[in-house]
Image (cartoon, rainbow, N blue to C red; front, side):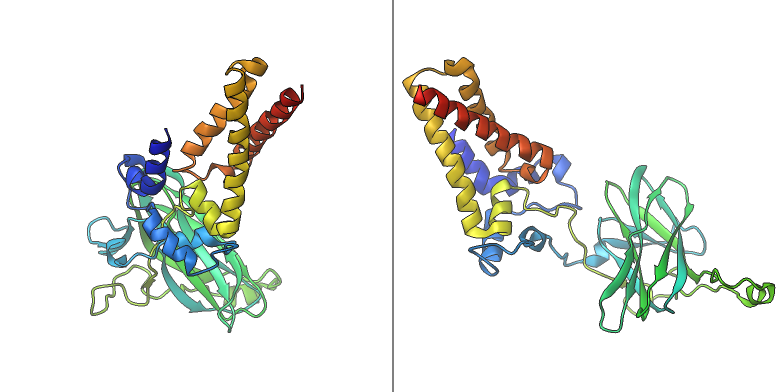
Length: 324
């Protein structure tokens, strides 16, 4: 059992890559050889607090994640196909503060999945800081559908970043006919002012018809994609990144104390002593720790709470029966 635990800990990345559920292009599992050097370049003793997010990789070949589709377009001859989640195709557009802006796009997917598309708007000031964000999470079906999202631009905003991306799930998402218009102000009540307000599309190359020398759509930028896996997919790597060596050592110390006391008690009596509760607690924690080599289950509050309740129950029964 100990050998299996050690093998799983140091090879968990390779193990998960062999499972089809986790082997999709939108996920990447990191092995200890990749994780440990990253940790020791940051905050090795106390962790970074955002350590797991540093494990999210920036992909090297964005061209493979956004594909120019010449067949499945809504209008014109081209559309953009997103094949990997969290890879942004974006364009910055000058905007006026204290206005409403509406982003629209025709989207479709070859696999029906809810909330699988980002139509994101970010308000950015002169310093490049994000003032407001509207994620614009929508669902794409098998046929082209018009989807919209809206944002209010706060004071101090200089530009709006229009960002498109596939959010999750298998398959691909297609985008076409991107539009960003300024909505009429609510206080424009006079009919003449309303008639004079003619919204126009502020997005350049909204149908991806114009290409640059490299064959990519003009005015659009592809940001290297992120994996949808935002943790190290290991309880121990997660603690090592978030809380550093001290945090991981503290966790292992508590677990070692629990198992040392439990094993000594069960060897002196029997597995079924104390109604078998102590033995059951020990096996359940052992199973959770083995599962922890491939999952950060303590991040999920109900499961994490149950984990510590079982340890507390086991330690309490041990103290009670040992004192008797």
